[in-house]
Image 1 (spheres, rainbow, N blue to C red):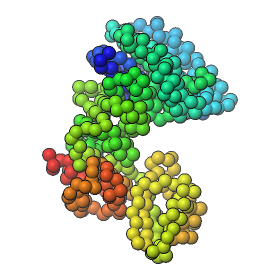
Image 2 (tube, rainbow, N blue to C red; image 1 turned 30 degrees about the vertical axis):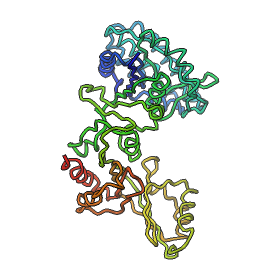
Image 3 (tube, rainbow, N blue to C red; image 1 turned 90 degrees about the horizontal axis):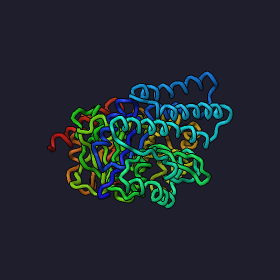
Image 4 (cartoon, rainbow, N blue to C red; image 1 turned 120 degrees about the vertical axis):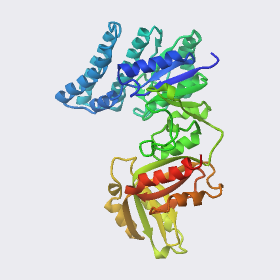
Length: 453
């Protein structure tokens, strides 16, 4: 195989019959795609997670029947479901009994075993859809390939053993020219128990399989035609980025843009395997290639927006020429498990933003009374909420001339609470009132991406 591609389809891409047919046609149209990694149909994993947490029998019946319905909607559209139906029934019965077990006693191992059924069902059905389109494919249980440790819910792969398994299980099939359909997100621990790889696990699976098979690229088929200069819902003129670097994608993902998080593609990143992002709904619209060193690398690449930020301003006159103030403040924050995003300091005060989008609680809840009391013993504390962080992502921003002028020109009408510039060569962050955030993004996009054309 000179050019081997690994394709991954996410939950919305395999949500229903017509979505699956669209994916099948993409696979059939690309002879280089030899391994296809699937997520569970949209909605299924969430239902299985709820069941795994243990619910009463009425609730259990309702949830299991919702899972059943999602599969049933696809099965009824098949011309002939007699081959796959018994297998889906068996998996649904499994889900039922595992859910019953979970209602008596939950466990991390049981949860992973239960959740894995979503991918097992979607891959079985996908094989049938390919068969109806006259394409032969081979179902592989990914657990026979991806070996992991026993950290249920967020297992780490054993790369050497995974490569050995791949040589034994996948290589012979690919050498014979088979098309392999397998599951994302799932692995197996040394005791033979099912594990899952945590959030973004299907991307990780695809990247891992690409690495152990020395594939040419990983194709991530999702519901958007690539990665854009900013959220097209805010800026209809947002442009698709044709090629970008893993580092730029990481910056964008860190700042909340709904793009690939390179952490979920680690094996591809470290083995320098290019990753493509395209839309399974509109494959003809093209997409974005994420590579290690794309050319050209423009000064400005994208704008990301993270809402719901809290600004903490800590002032103390005794901070002037005093040692240890910052160390003290960060010590207090660390004890309360608060992670700080951006920071600016002056002689007598330090301002920091806290991101709570990562946690379920709100920014105000992050700042417990104990924390505020502890901080107010060493300084005056001011808390501002209702702010958003606008991150301008690019390359070598610290050495490009005139960057600050262009940014501030675009922002002259707006009140900027804080700016963080110079710490990273890849981003400039501005903190703005949330009600102006969308306008700020539009103004920056217009100045930096539309007028420079």
